[in-house]
Length: 407
Image (tube, rainbow, N blue to C red):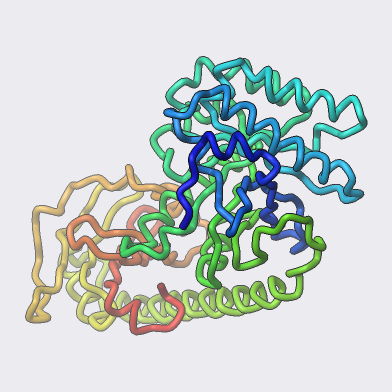
């Protein structure tokens, strides 16, 4: 790898060239835009991303090179007849340094020549913008009034700052999928990205998953609400614009695999729901209405022994009426009385599920979540004994793992 000196780069600006990273839409599997990627071409191609992030390089140098690389890219983009977008990644600190004048003056020259600014997306890293949100919100709002869209990169790392992020009303939120190569458990990220997906819907933003290099990463992006995808799995960064349908057939095949697998998962969950439902109906017939709740949960626990490790009963207000029936390490069912009168109404979807059970007169299988006491992924099956009494059956990870489609 060649070590580049910033002065050498500034002295050889003709060797600075724009490359373009395609961005694909899930809706029609076509390229909807390209992100500008700056490179220095000598004996080999070298990325210049570092140049614009290095605060030790004078801002005048970085702004000048920014303008040069963007001019070259816009000249190529201006001549295209496609209605695609151009994503311009800009150092947020540099943008604020001159209140966006350098960028806006450049874009105005192309707007005067007939370029529709609606085809441009300004991309900023989330960290610096969020830290200085009050300084940015008016500038970014003005930029958006010109028709330029706003994309916020690394949005997936801003879970605790979503309210501040909403203040600038981004059009696109970018999330990196490279974590799937790490040892960290993907389901922890999935919970975060599920929240980000809901947040994006509320503010009218689109989720873009970047860094997609594998089938697994595309599947993750698809399952977590990604509308746009970007990465070498689709096409390499090139110094020209590739055909918008270059990977349509490949993505359609992948989507077919995803859909088939999800259909199997839904069927597996429905089959499990029906199986538990039938067993509970049999168990309840053996019980008398005046039986103590603890006797009820022990009967149900033993009847459902292969699929559960914990059983308890709550009322419609969320108060636990029974003890916890829990299976110990020897496979024996024991009562834990401290569970009585605990309130679980704070749990997400608790009241929604209570109402659903009363209306539909059947049980509900929860999504996967992490049990606090066992620190493992589980599901809970809830079932209406009456209009105000409900059984909850916790299903362990080991059982879910052994059954196809339940994880």
